[in-house]
Every structure is written in C-alpha cells, then in structure tokens.
Image 1 (cartoon, rainbow, N blue to C red):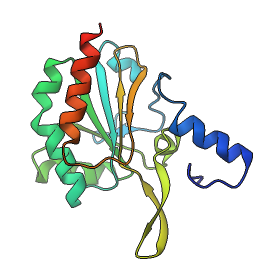
Image 2: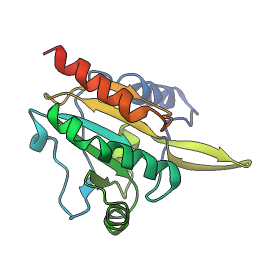
Image 3: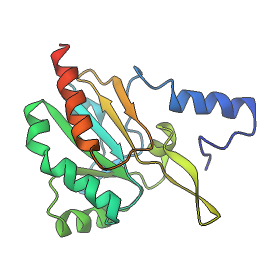
Length: 177
C-alpha cells in the first residue's frame, strides 16, 4: 500500500497534494466502504443530505471511543441540520458491531478493510510511536454538502472540542443555502 506522506518521486508529491489539498470542493467518493450490516456505502443514497465522514484509527480505543460518543451524543443536533454521521476505520464489520453495542452507539460505522477509501482521502499515513514506524489512519473529518462536494477538511484531529467544531461548521454550511 502506498501512503500519502511517503514522498519518493514527483508523482508521490502530486499524489500527496491531490489527497491533502486538492480534495476541497471535489466530489466525495465512498469506494470500498461497507456498513456493519454488510451493505455497501453509496453516495447516491445521501444526495440531499450533508455528510460528516470521519476517519478514526481503531474501534474501542480511548480517543476513538470519545470521538464516536461525541458524535453520537449530538446525533439529533446533526439530524436536525439534515446531516448524517459516518465513521470509517479499517476494522471489520464484526468489530464495528461490538463497538456500537458496547458503547450504545447509533452512528453509522463503515469498514474500509482494503484501505481504498483511506488512501483516496489521504488518511493512510506513516506514523511513529516510541521510534517504531508504522502505517495507520490519521484522524480526519470531511464535511460533504448535499450535492456530494467536500466543503471542509479537518486533518490531525484532536478529539477534544472537535464534534462541536464540526457542528458549528454544518450550521454555517446550512446558512449559506
């Protein structure tokens, strides 16, 4: 797999720019995403709704749990703004089901087992912990408007206050219509 931050050539630089900068205003894509019930995620199913598509590293880890609970706690606020929440990780559908059940989550979770969406959105990156390098998901959120266009991107998300920031941005997006 190719990571968007691994720059070895001019084509890698173009790839990084497309994924980290050029996506704003582009059409969203749900290639490779499936829901925990096994159904495929299809952008056409959400035409006319805003979408908060957030990528997180792993089910049932402290930061990911806080983020999921935060979105879940404001699910009605987002719904009142004609917005759906979809969380994405590389975890399996079974893992998502257990995660949702354990924490009473009502948000939608999608699996990207092959990493196609993670690569398309530029969130599959090289990381480092205690000197060891590995690849993983960079916690990121994409706000997609009712026509399927990416309107706002948050990269390297800090969980604290993030859900409120996204909610405020959705309110702003809706005012502009």
